[in-house]
Structures are given as C-alpha cells and as structure tokens.
Image (cartoon, rainbow, N blue to C red; front, side, top):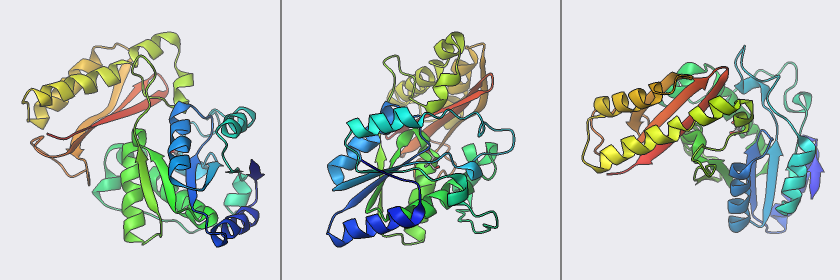
Length: 282
Ligand code: PAF
C-alpha cells in the first residue's frame, strides 16, 4: 500500500493508473476509521480497479468552538486497517500541503440544501466539505467517490455539486453501518461516556418508531416530527439540535409523507453532537 503526503506525487500516480486503463475509487475520510468507513472501502473495491483512501481532518469544515483540535486521530491504526483491506493508496496530506496560507478559493452549493439541518447549525460546514472534496477529486481523479448515507445531507450536497459542475465522476452512496445495538457508527462515538452511549440509542429507536408509524399509515409530518421529538426527549441527557422531515431529494419542506422523505436527527449528549437519519418511501 502506497502512502502519499504530497499532492503532486499522488496526482501523477493517479494519472499513471488512468493511462493504464484502471478505474479509480476514492474514499474520502477524516480518519479514525470504523466499520462504516471500511464498508465504503469494500464497496469501492467491488466497483473500481484501484482504491485510494484519503485521511485528512479538514480544518475548514469545522466552525469556531467545534472539535477540530480534539477530533480523534490514529494514523498507525488507520493505515493498518487499510492495509488489511488491500487498499492501493492512502493520501494523507498536512494542512499546509492542502491549503496555502493565502488560499482564498472555495466551492459552495447554495440554497435550501445547505441552508437547513447541519447547514443551519454549522454555518460554513458544507462550504468546507465541498471545497475539500473538489480538491480531492482534482488530486485523485476518481471515477467513483464513496460516501456514507449516515451523512445524508453531505452526500446530497456533493451529488448536487458534481451534477451542476459536471465533475466526471459518480458519487456512490453506501448504507449506514450500525453497532449491534443500533447506534450509527461514527468517529465521534468515542466521546460518549457509558451513560450517554446508552441513551444515544434513542436516535435509532425514534427513527424506527416514526418509520413504523408511516408504514401504519401516518402521513402528517408535523405529527411525525412531534413523535420523534417526544421519543428523544425521554432520554434525559439528549438535547435536540434538530428532528426534521424533508423531501429526500432536495430537502424541500413536506407536509405529507407521501413521497421519498428523509427523517434527520442531530442530538447533543453533553458536548458530543450525533446525527442519524432514515429514508422512507411509501
Ligand atoms: O465525511 C467526512 O468524513 C468528511 O466530511 C469528508 C467527506 C471526508 C470531507 O472532509
């Protein structure tokens, strides 16, 4: 497995792979890998000849006062796991390599799709994500890029960017991977103490109950949102950031769950903010 730290070197290597007729799958990550990331890698291996994983904790997608400095990092462990998965190359640049101090170019998707949910709670977050992904796409030249459905809004925003800016690649969505008890896998789960970890199960439970209600004929999204909020509020440590239901394609408001919808949650347990979601089609 090759480990690259410099943009020019990996870009040249990726060009060579393409000249040899190989397809490239890119899995962008911020490291501290778990089974959710590994499921992206396995999917990429199925679709592409060469798999590149990037590990970069992208400073520009964190807001002031967020967890950039303390975001968990373990490069040795990550590269060990990727070696086992037979990944071809890892791209792990430094902050200076990715961003010149005078860097002033950003890629931004505007409108409802970035104005709601995490876009409202974390201003500038998606601009950071779309900018770094544009750079990663230009550096690693992927035919396909793999993202987890856990970050549902992120993948919707990236799909829109790729469509509207005509990037020559496909975005592949990979389903959420959960712990045995239902908690969606996240690098941030390590922040939870045992009590919060237990109470965090309420996210998946609330989504399952609301999904069940839809299957039983409930269509009123106001009532469904109340249901989500009531269930989550039964966990004393849970503080709701949002519990919303929108159109699954563009995050438009929906009064009735009569099309493909997304139920999206962000809930804080102390300083730890967890997200989860469920797509439901009636
Ligand atoms: O989902 C993530 O880990 C990050 O937002 C991503 C896509 C790697 C961009 O930094």
